[in-house]
Image 1 (tube, rainbow over the protein chains, first blue to last red):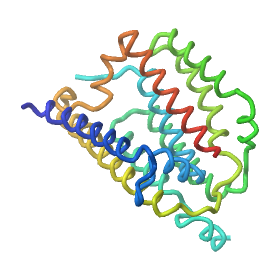
Image 2: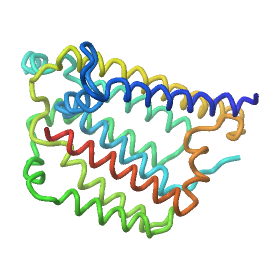
Image 3: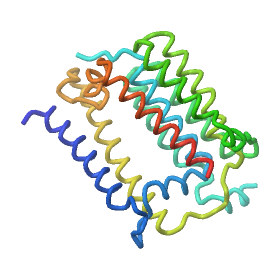
Length: 72
Length: 191
């Protein structure tokens, strides 16, 4: 396994863990853990969070659509 | 004034300021001038939004009554889907989108004053931890790639996704997913 394989596998593990967390709490019935959507509605009551998330979302679009990546 | 701010929020200065500050430092390390400008300006904007400009409001709720967002999403989808990547026109469209979404996210209130329920706070801690670990992994790959001068040995998410986005289907899929996330964030921010 190369270093690149290891790093890529890490991203896939994080993706799987994120999906599993979302799936396990999606019905919002867990006694100690709100669903992702419920949590999002709660934290979006704060302006700093709203701006932080929306700017980061916008930057993702910018980053993947506008600049040319310079890689070696 | 400070006492009032602390009554409304446990963190009068949003932790997003720290997060964007760290991202700004990484962009300086990367040497990406445009990203430096974006993140440093955003850090200052978020800081001001909950401190000096906290009483400034924008009637974002008004735009929720009609289907402005849905129509704007369709226009963005068609334009970003049809215009080639890395073009000046795509940059212009995204800048226009930024000018629209900032006031919508700004909204009426800096803080509603409603405390998160325990279940919501637990979920926030869980998802924040997940996001921090992902970011640290990405930052490590980026920094090691810069130091080693071989990005392919330490691939970032951008490097892995870039070839996919060069295909028509890959780009269309990304634009649809990206717009859906943005739409969901703006809707969640007004409930």
